[in-house]
Each structure stands twice: as C-alpha cells, then as structure tokens.
Length: 380
Picture 1 (cartoon, rainbow, N blue to C red):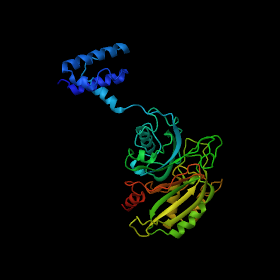
Picture 2: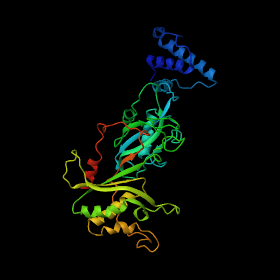
Picture 3: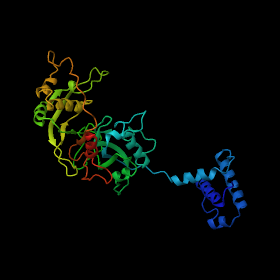
C-alpha cells in the first residue's frame, strides 16, 4: 500500500520542523498544487539534504517515516522547568489496592510509585528526575493493606509565575482508582519565610517526616461483645514514653534499634458519621504519637481486643511495657494474633502552623470515604 498525499504532506512538514528549515520555503497552497510524483520527489530531496547535514544515512523505507515524525509532532515541545517550588501534598489511598506505600524496585503497584509516575506524566517533574532530585519526603510509611486519608509528601515541582496551579486537580486527573490528592500547600523553603514561619530545622527545607509534630492513626472495629470500658482502662497505660518492643515486629537485622516511643493520647470512641448507615456498633481506636514502630498500632489493638474479650485483664497492657531485667515479659512477649491491617488508617500528620498551610478541602467526587469500604470488609 502506497502512502497518500496527506501523509507525504505531514512528512514534509515534519522534516521542516526537525531540521529547523524555514517554514516559508513552500506554502501549503503551493504544496497542494503539486502532483503526487512531485511531492515524492520533493520529499526525497529534502530527506537527502537533511541526512547529509546530519552526517547520517537516509532510511531505506519512507513508509515508516511519516508515522514516526507525526508522533514526535504530537508530543509537542518540551516544558521548561526553570521555575520550581516546594510543595506538600496531602494524599488519601485505599491500602489493599496497593502493595504498600514506599516505592520498590521490584513492584510498580505502590502508592509512592503511582504518585511519582503521575508527577512525571503530568510533567510537574522531569521525566529523568529521581526522588532525591525533587527533594522527596514522606510523612508516614504505611505497610501493605494500611490506608490513609492524611499522609503527606513533600516534592519540588514545576510552577508558573503569577499563575496559581491546581496541583491536586492536575494529579487527580491521571492517578489510579483508590489514590487521590486531597489538598496541597506551599512548603517552607530553606531560609525563606512562609506564612510567618521558618523551618524547625535551621537552614533546611520542608521535610514531611522530620517536620511532623505528630501522627494520628485510627483503627476501626465492630463492638460486638467487646467490653469498651475495660479496653479504655487498659489503653490509659499506653500514654507517655515507653519501650514498645513487646508491641511491634522486631527487626532482627538492627541490633541497635531503639523501641522507645511517645504516645500522646489514646481514645476508644464510637464512630460518628452521618455517611455511615450503621448503628453504634462501629468503634475506633485513635492513637496519637510522635512516631511509631513496625506493626505497633496493630499489636496495641490486638492486646486491647483480648482485654475487651475478657481474655486478659487491663493490667496486661502496662505489664507488657515493662522490659527491665527481671520483669515478667523482659524475655519476650506472649504470642498473640496480630490485628488485621485492613481497618488501620493513617488519619493525620500534624505540622507547625505555616510550615505546610493546607487549605480547607473536601474529598474529590469519585473518591469514597475510606471508612465505608473498610466497614464492608469488616462485616465479611
């Protein structure tokens, strides 16, 4: 099958664009007046001139050239990245739809991987950029199956002078189901005043992990026959600074790891939401702290469920926190079934006023409240 005159015309224009030749060599009207043979001859002549100028051999097939040049033309010119700004993104995701939050070399279906891919696809960061190139930071690193409605990432993106870009809207247009940007905020640059505040760490830019004042997790559960009063009594022992080695998964490869963490508050309350068509049977364990260990919240929930089931007394919570030599559980914790990861949500990452001033927002249409699918899974 031969190539048509329209394809030759496109090929001709593409050669002009790629070679930098003046566009007024022949007008479109003059091109339209040429016969097919004259167009072919003209195209071959220009192709030869271009190949000689570039010191390359002309391709043997002229049939493939129009498609290749037309595709290059569709891509448009490259976007300039001279103007950049550091921003914070508040993200929500349904945990069981991804293989964890942190990007992995062997898997693409992680929250961080999909988000970084979307930033490149929308040309908010350069195609060849690495995470270190764009000042990437994360507020929380959730495990496989754990969801979030308040995780935060910091990233340096393209900006336009005197134009306010809606980064949330841009990214949500290409992000996969189960992952959305809820809001964005200008983040503090090194040595630059933003909303009257400077970074907590002198001469350093905003860091979603190190600048966080606290993190809040919520663990959803059905009350059923659990004694909420006993669970609340036991939960009081968590508040304060303790060694949580009996409430986490130990990293056997890190002998120097510290298991001391500070819990600011623990509450167990019924879920109050008009968007949930359920009775007062749905409760949540709300845990607020500076930072958490691997599986810490799930281990804490597992022990509280045993207390609520009257399988352990409320005092077991405090006894497991004693790790001094000679203590009851200094040699290791009892074997309890780890609480499921599905009902666990990273609810919020808190920052000093002005460091990452997120605007008021509403969940975008099409992004369901995470609690609804969580409740469905709990009922199964």
